[in-house]
Image (cartoon, rainbow, N blue to C red; front, side, top):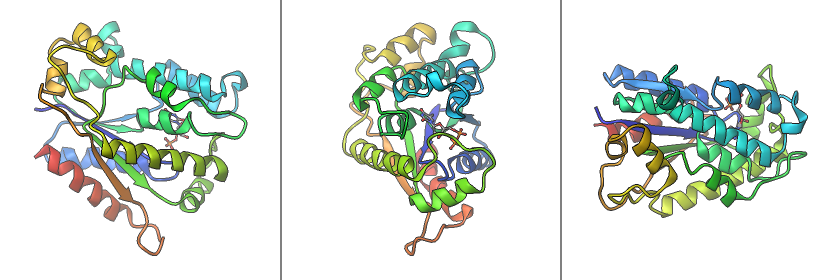
Length: 257
Ligand code: TYD
């Protein structure tokens, strides 16, 4: 089977976790080997990030530091099992031909760590992209678009809160996501040459020879499939989980068939 990397992104309260899980389930229903993966991960750096976001590690709660921690967590989550042979990792799943559904990916870093968060500061967007150069482009990026008010209502129903879950912070992240999605939809994200050029291409050739060509068979350019799925209807009312999930499945189904 052809490996497929799918990323779901959006602001807190947009329903990414629900929809990433559902998408993996639906793909399995079609007989596709699909795996759900979450960032921050459950690994050591992911746990550190959670304590920083929960306010227990104030020295780490700066956008510049968080950007590096998220990039480190992403690196080990992507490649860990290829260099330490312990546990599973995203590249391990892809090498077995899985469709990996990522509940957040590098675009969360680019949006969150580059937008001004009260008390956390902001890191330059280009620099955040650069420290994520080991994360390959996904084949599909689904951005779940919900208004800040709807997201805040959902967050208010949860038991745990994070430093970034304020109206001001979410509005800044939403604006950043919109700019990123718009830019990605305009530009080809990946144009593989025969030789590995990007840091992720070189690393993959070293750790899992052949996987790079299976992920992106050499040809001119891969415009990233970017889908913006609205979580609300035209009157601003939240759409049902089923409706949103069907939209997401429509985008993905066209690429897996
Ligand atoms: P989490 O409790 O996993 O929330 P969610 O279910 O919304 O993903 O917390 C993850 C938080 O970390 C969320 O506020 C988004 C943020 N985040 C970043 O700031 N940068 C990143 O690179 C990632 C992956 C997440």
